[in-house]
Image (cartoon, rainbow, N blue to C red; front, top):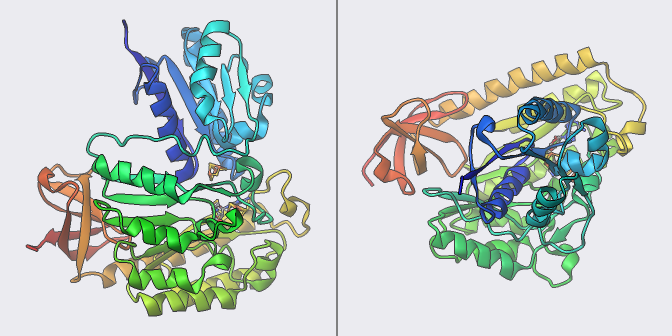
Length: 441
Ligand code: SAH
Ligand code: SF4
Ligand code: F3S
């Protein structure tokens, strides 16, 4: 029998990347092998994001490109998945003809049945219903050969309703997985050679709170810290309002917890934070980051910032800049505010002109680049423990890996090092990576 090939294009966050891994596993059971080459594929899935308008445009332009392949090969199955699919549902079919499959963020586990229906009945299938179960979250994705790092979803959805954000509407209400399921999955991953896990959730700090079982994120971390074979634990994303002192304390006490936290601040202006419905003040944020650094002086702190939220004046923007000067993040993902239909911010007055947003973003990114460079330069001469992930993209003599603080390090080394944690003396700090030399341990 001829081999069947699957091509997946993924947009959006790490959660979407993990969802794509799960889709690939479900279709592997139906005989599909993954390919990078879309022209060779029998089935193509686009896993979409809807967080900003640009993300939606990208998804549709990719869909347009792929539909041309379908014109040449009518047997090709094209599926549209993820957050934008969740948002549009059957409207995808009226916007683009001949899409076979549209499915949402809670329907991934149904992919095998949906594929069968498409193949048998040859008519479009749409499944975007929300479910109160966590079927899609628990699909076990065995790691690729040689992988040392894996994602593990610990919760679904979000209840925070930040005024600008569509995620609660597209991922549904917050619901945590049972700790036993999570621990079981990580034990299995460790058995497959995984050394590092990244726990995923829109707000991992509120893990377990709604369950009433009394298990919270800190107790989950402690359990994972005991799993043999796992050397590093990371998590994303943390919400500043729910960052407890106990969790901060873990950065000093839990050996396997990496010394990095991604803690999106969004704005340094209290007026804007309030309009965003973020639930903390700039002072509280500063206090929490100071506490993190007291507990763990070398911790790297990264963040997300939005510029041009409705009503953001030059003064508000300057307060964000002042906060960045005070905190000196290791890196920041920064975005121009993008209005999303149905969110509370859509109805707010004080829209900031596009050119002004662009200017603010440019200034902010230039400042952050200076800070990132400063941080990376300050690591020159230090010895960092690097978990080696594989050969570097740029040179065949080099290996690449990450420090506990999430910095990429390239150094001369042999493939036998993959999966091992080795000490590397940093010789040079660049903007996006570090260079170093392995020292004997
Ligand atoms: N749950 C996470 C991540 C949410 S999405 C959190 O709370 O941090 C990732 C980032 O996208 C957000 O932190 C925010 O900075 C940005 N973002 C979300 N909605 C946006 C919008 N409408 N316009 C611009 N940026 C947005
Ligand atoms: Fe969106 Fe806020 Fe939820 Fe993050 S916490 S996903 S920004 S609503
Ligand atoms: Fe995008 Fe959905 Fe993630 S909107 S950022 S893919 S949760």
